[in-house]
Length: 89
Image (cartoon, rainbow, N blue to C red):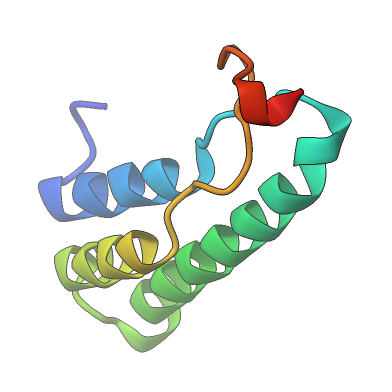
């Protein structure tokens, strides 16, 4: 990605951070995973729209997105590869 300007690269990295969350460990974890992913995808979409349709600064939009991701962390479900705990059983 050497041809991608740094501001766009920063935004793309934030979008990837938003969407590349760990897969759920079980079907039971899928509902929480889906809610979390949908929320993060919405914020990523807003950031991209602001750059593409409103000509916002990509780096500002990346910062906005990362602030929203911090408010909505990818927690609340057991991710694939995570060992079971006593609470899971």
